[in-house]
Image (cartoon, rainbow, N blue to C red; front, side, top):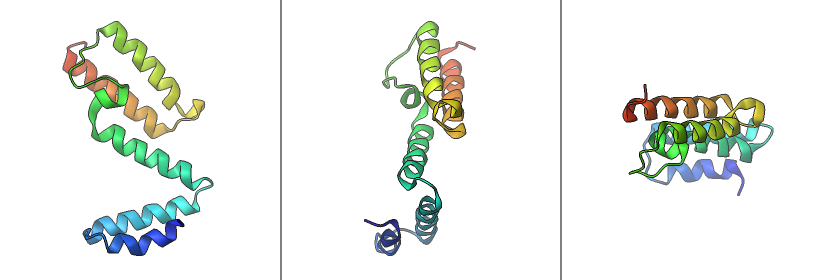
Length: 110
């Protein structure tokens, strides 16, 4: 389905006008990007990563309490994938860095 065809559908989803506007803008920006699919994947990945906390970003379960050494190994792997020089994005790398800071604070590794 063409992204522009989604814009009228957004209005029928019983969403507030601000949400419809944001979704429509996102669809238009995706269409203007060189790779609309990748653009949307990156945006959605960032939303999920930043909304579900450090455990989700770094791949830990809700009850996991990783040791500092395990946390460091997982962080290094995640930042390599998220880094702009390795095919990731600045925002994805920022999400990984933020996740590490949150994990260290919660786990007392500061």
